[in-house]
Length: 485
Image (tube, rainbow, N blue to C red; front, side):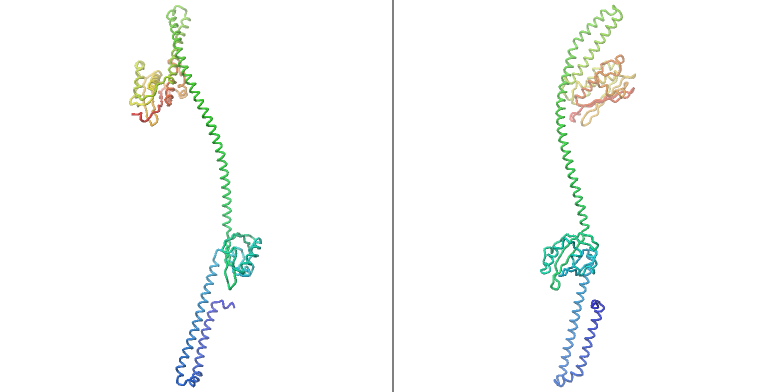
């Protein structure tokens, strides 16, 4: 029977049939010529030729029709054969396993993909029951019940659905698969067609995604807990900051009140001390005039010490009174030209400037909004210090201003003796002196007054100096843009 499946054999067989029909036609024609012609002639007489011709035509037509029927059937068979070959090619090249189970539950078709998936070849799988071969024991009861119903009706709950199951390999291992089942009627019997797909990679990806999801959930949980802890800490810090803010505000108010009280006390004390001290100084000076030279040398020295001490005390009280007035007796801020404040300071120091042949250079100073008297006092103190701490050369003081959007920076530069860097902060303290009274006069409060005035205006003051090369005193005064010409 296998010979009929071979193309070369079928072609020879077809040729044999054609030759057989041809020989049969020739034999029949011969028989007709030598035998039937005589009989027809006896029966039909003169019509024998016409009848013979008609009979020959009929027989020839029947022969041709038979040949056409045969060739048509052969063409249909060839198309069917090509279709089968094409289906085999498709199923063989399919990446998914294709399995057909006949009505008896046995495997009737098994493609190459099924071989690669489960490890069984087509010869090993065909004719065997499906479930014991590739299905775990877990699915056996449900499989038997569903297949018994399917064989009789071609219907089932899982038909047309996609299931995810576990399959058994030939080597005993398991493989996750995706199964789709459909019913097909072959020769009046219901057969099941299963499409099986290996989903190992997909399951692995799903496991990785699940692990990653759990990891993300854990991270989110930890971050959420951390944020909640941070939020609690922040709330606690905010509460502490509010408490601290309230405390600082209270301390600020208390400190402000205390400073005001101290300034008022310093003002009152320095003011009230002036009269008794003036009286003491007057009587000591009278003693000096009346008894100087009449007493011994020690008495004259003692009286001289008393007079100098009284003078220094008067100067200290006077400077302390000026310092206290910065905060208590300051005037409201007004808009004025800084050049006018410098003119006033230079005019107050004109004798000192003339005696020391000093040169004060300034021009194009801006308008600002400040306490004019106090600003003039800053310039007066800085010019006075520049002349006092002069070098061997005539003093030269240069005053300049640089304006930004927020402030005005003033610079008072001189060519005096300069200051060492370690004393830059110290010189702005109360009663701070870097030289003895014999070298330079003064109480050491002038720069402290300048600092307090600048701070009252919301600015800051500092020094840039080099020993024996001069100093630069710089201070800022906040300024509004509309106050600048």
